[in-house]
View 1 (spheres, rainbow, N blue to C red):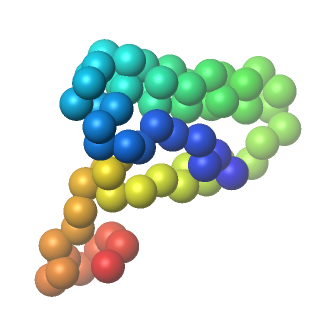
View 2: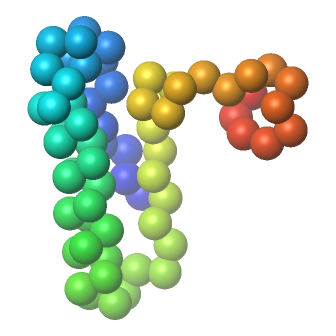
Length: 64
């Protein structure tokens, strides 16, 4: 399970490139490590609405 992410909005507003690099590159490193070891069957990425955005209340799929 991957819980690591930089999610504080003030960090995003201050330095958008660093925010994106931390979240995307950090996840990429973990996925690459899973690929190299060939031992991981499932990768679960847990994060907040600050990273993915909010979901509409009437949407059929997603997190309410």
